[in-house]
Amino acid sequence: MSLLSLLMPTLWVYFIGFRVALEQLFRRPFPLSVSKAVFPLQNGNVALVTGGSKGIGYHTVKNLARLGMHVIIAGNNEKQGQRSVMKIKEEIRNTKVEFLYCDLASMKSIYQFVKEFKAKNFPLHILINNAAVMLVPEKKTEDGFEEHLGVNYLGHFLLTNLLLDTLKQSGTHSHNARIVTLSSATHYVGELHLHDLQRSCLYSPHGAYAQSKLALVLFSYQLQHLLTLEGSHVTVNVVDPGVVNTDLYQNVCWAAKIVKWMTSWLLLK
Image 1 (cartoon, one colour):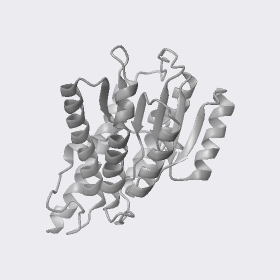
Image 2: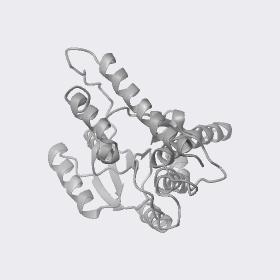
Image 3: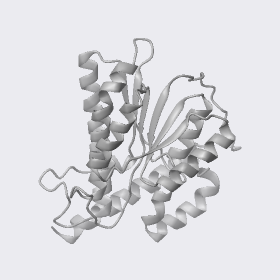
Image 4: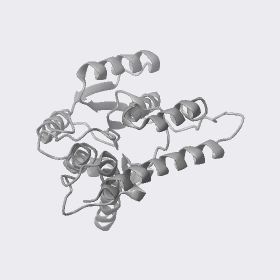
């Protein structure tokens, strides 16, 4: 594999990132005021959010809890997870927020998590596949998969399939259960290297990240197609959150960090 083949994913990922940042910047209304949408209360409904201890996931959990939902945070940091639960309970006054350990880099952990969740006999109305790693150095999961592929895609693929029966049972004709998976605009430049999904020939964290996000998009489309064919009351959505304030940016290049710092006062809340 040539050096150009290694550099191209990097260039494309940053090009997409800068483009998304500019689009958000110029499309954002001025003065900066966001009208708060009014959502119906969700008392009695249950949501599960992976990576809900911080960043996008944390604020998602907080807003779902505000609507009265019973929310379960699935994460791989017990201390941070319990701290987030206590903080949300104090702020929202909703005691139905809890943390369950789940390491998406370990299939054994995912199976154990699902076993513990199903032992509670909860329905599941919303599954939000939020957790991710981005641009991390080359590393393998417990099961030997490249980390972007293993955590971002395979971990959520397994988790979703293990919980699919509960989602189907929870959805109704009038209120579908919902699967929401966070992807990224970088999926547009992602390529599925079916001959080398592990990216072992010449590792590119940018290429690996974009590939994992493309895999999530394709999985979501195919899953929705299959669920529609069988008439299940489950809706599958895949979402690009755009530029948001998240720890995932810690591995981006220095130029991207400068741009993030310069635009954060406008874009990141």
